[in-house]
Length: 92
Image (cartoon, rainbow, N blue to C red; front, side):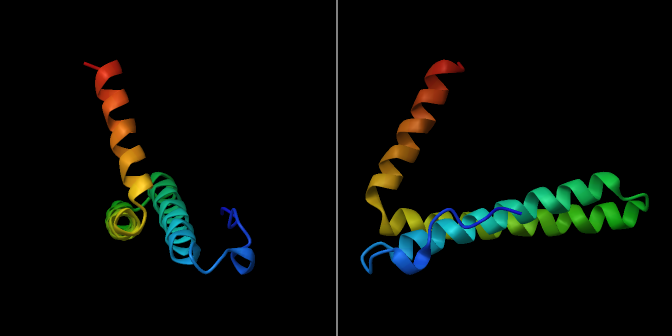
């Protein structure tokens, strides 16, 4: 599992909400990876289906946190869009 990349105790009051959202996103993406790996390892098909369903829910959670982060951090939103445009330009 990932470690929190910043010491949240040291984060200024103006940035704490953005940092806790990024930390929550890391946790959700870790969970997606874990559940997809467990699904790949599981022998029982019903268990595979369950793990993949839970992984999908974690992706939704990551999207919820990202949506809130983009509301709180306009620079993050601009850079996300810039990254999307770069990929679209590279991969036509």
